[in-house]
Image 1 (cartoon, rainbow, N blue to C red):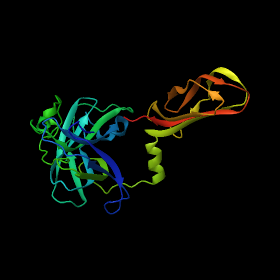
Image 2 (image 1 turned 180 degrees about the horizontal axis):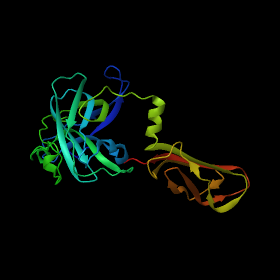
Image 3 (image 1 turned 45 degrees about the vertical axis):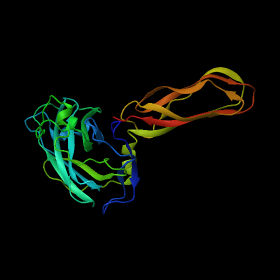
Image 4 (image 1 turned 60 degrees about the horizontal axis):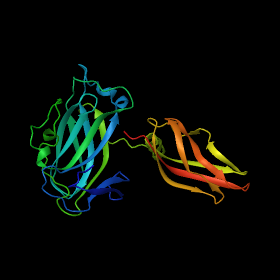
Length: 290
């Protein structure tokens, strides 16, 4: 995510560290500025039910160890923010880039005996890689321990690297792994098929197709359609394309209801002008991102 002062785009690339087949590359499309409010952040959210092993909020709370591979031509100190979204607490860490090669970095964040993660499918932990930060985000006191009272000024204290001050600045990342405890183990590679099924909990395409062979008007409902795998939650739907044959008109075809397991749709105010064969279809994406 980026502010108005810092815009860019992400792309996959084949320039990878040894043992990896892909990475995410952020490229600046225009030069940035010294605006105090600028920020340039690469982030993700994790579900609370996947974080229970950290025992956060108990006397047995464990440390968080985050490892990742970075390649960038912008040297300096970079901040990583860990934010507990269930209890409004955060802690920060840093890593230092001194060359433009692929390097592995490890940050161990302290345990937190205050505030349990919710044991559900909601977003509980926000992991934010800071690529650039104006003084609004660096002027406070560094958070080296978990604490509440989060303000902008403490989010990226220590950040000196400013990706985007120059046109075509790049920052690449792969092999991100969060582990319980203070030791970073080798990256756990999963099969393509396994990873695809995990991804479909958050995002998958949908298509609704119908055909008709006799005339008629009204609203037409379609049977419940199951997703390939259950999604994280009932998704939102974005339509890419809607089409019909020449002898079949309809006001709209839309998803009328859904849950994590599937959806059903209606053709609203359809009208077949004769008894000839007709069809209609609509396809797009279903998203249950955090």
